[in-house]
Length: 184
Image (tube, rainbow, N blue to C red; front, side, top):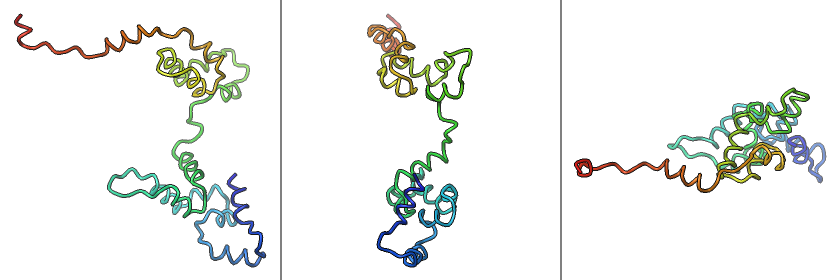
């Protein structure tokens, strides 16, 4: 996708090759489409200037103002989605994300225990959330990447509404006993 964007940005219809070369020469080095023409797209996101821009956009420091995502994207010559995507890629590598059902089936073909996916922590959390009526079955199936029928089969019976109310009431703190009530 990034390559297609760079090629589209550089395909100016009414320019000759010489004019296009002049345009590239005048373009700052940190613009994405110029960088892709001279180096690789992946190296672009490792550049110090780009990292500093990302740091400015997603700065959690309350004493400094952070840069707007669209401003940073315009500065780098990319879309805001590309900025956000590459920030997520550097912070949370894909191999650390929880597996969805189809990925698990691809990476573990023919395993002896087909229920291993349903014992994973993030899947059990989604199942418990639906059992406790804290979320819908559709949301849970979406979260784990399974079909709704298979997810509902694994959820089993839902807790009754009365059980949920009792659990909430039991969790409420009891009022403290005053000194006068203690004497009586």
